[in-house]
Image (cartoon, rainbow, N blue to C red):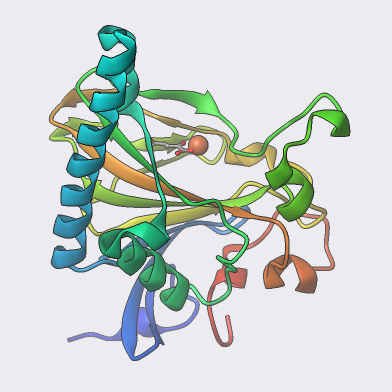
Length: 243
Ligand SMILES: O=C(O)CCC(=O)C(=O)O
Ligand SMILES: [Fe+2]
């Protein structure tokens, strides 16, 4: 097989980490937007989907108690916090992400947010970086760990039609298969908001989309500590070794 794709200046390449091959596609260099293909095994995907089903069930019980079915059903379809320490399936994907993306610090990350979209489901254009009117409004997370430095989205179920994540200011649409993940920076080198990272989840036309999000916080991020420039952060900062 032609191995010229292994050339380090390619935009689709592989690196070896923890005795595993990590397949990378650089969608944008600056600010970095990167897809990791097949980051998770088929078993990890199946186990995480099963966990998501189980968690939805739990949520529905709470819903019935306060008698507000319809609103809560929509919310149920939208999101569930998953505490990775509590569930082997979630701990497994957390550990894989942490081990295979060594330049990111997961110790100060928010826990997993599992999202499930049905046909018609979508996520309007937004920034993940949080903006507060003043420091008085900061919550505990913001005070202790800082703002949302970057976002890792992990794909577990892909819609048959629709459901891309688009980055209109980068001219990019990310389409994933179960087991893929992608990462981008929400902050620049000076820790301010990266305006170019605006993104949206396009409507689902057919099927279901299941993803989980991890928001990494600013505190103790080696990438920020090493970066002297206040510019957009480069994708090259994500890869171990010489890039
Ligand atoms: O559903 C998507 O594709 C985007 C999700 C998203 O923007 C987020 O979780 O912050
Ligand atoms: Fe987002």
